[in-house]
Image (cartoon, rainbow over all chains, first blue to last red; front, side):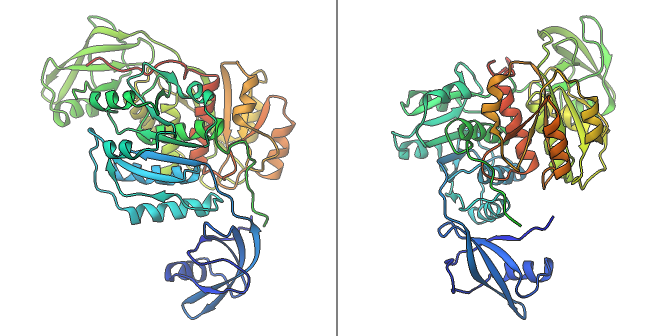
Length: 249
Length: 249
């Protein structure tokens, strides 16, 4: 299967506006993919849709000249993921999957039972770029620095519903809870291994914009809960009524 | 938070039937967890529910004596996952997540675009045991040796619906397709990176028991599609109406 490489670039994409690629991207296209001058590369920047571009190399340097727009810019749902950081490989997985599943904003939140409090936004951004490139997304999620759960709840806009997955039960399955919602803005909060502390659960349940939900009888790992909750939201409220986008090769 | 260790064992679980633990499990409880004689350990075997057991050690050897049954045996949905093997870490992830999400049977299937054809069932079984232990599951999924997609389809019971996620689109979102089903037996088939070949799609679409479905506009990685498809099935047809099971510590 032919496969046209697809890159996120920070540059404006418009006809007759050639730009230079970052060193790593130039090396990838010229040395790793062994593309020659004149090869087609797809590029998106989160603003100007997706473009077929023409590659030009000059020694180690690489340049892209946008030729034709292949897709106009589309903005996804205004879905905000708040997650308590866990172990490194599983955090990486959360960033990758949240990007694939179309989240607009990712906020790490520190909860009472959070073990891992060291996170690097630059590293998370690289993972999100890679996931956006391979999933045919047209934009990147915004990734915020970590903050405490209390601060995140205080800053939350009260007209936006926030769903949190409560392993302690005593509430509705998420698929049923979502039946009442059509608001295209929403937040989903996933706790760490061990769930939320009793104080946190009390706080969360006291807030009008918060809806506790369950994800079945088994206790899911945090990263599984992220994918499951985002899947249910996108299927019932978000953009999963749309057909898959397949590039024309 | 106190946490009682939970182990899968192959032995019968009944009052007054002490048994010896496998070497690795004994070492884990006695050396790693540093449990003393008389400590409580939870055990399940897929047949007799879950039991609180009493640990006894003898040098490096460990023994468990089942004391009280904490949960009766329950059998989950009869959900069968067929997946095309991908890269090692992502295969591991599929086994772990399918187990967490309550799949009864896992079959690797070799498709036209399958790159990785080397799989070790014993390794997959260890991953499934670990996931079942941590997810409060009461049984293990059965894991079959790999077979060709054609052979798997020929052997499929024609009264059991089989859903496959078709990146080529031209069909219904999975959440809508599931609305017609209440059959607690089902199969879910996930292809490799690159999806199914034109011949495979033609074969799949010619079979009465097969329903193609989509998972939104973005192209998901295979392991993401596994979690998303299983989540939707469990939420709409399977056991996600049940509350989470929380052990009493």
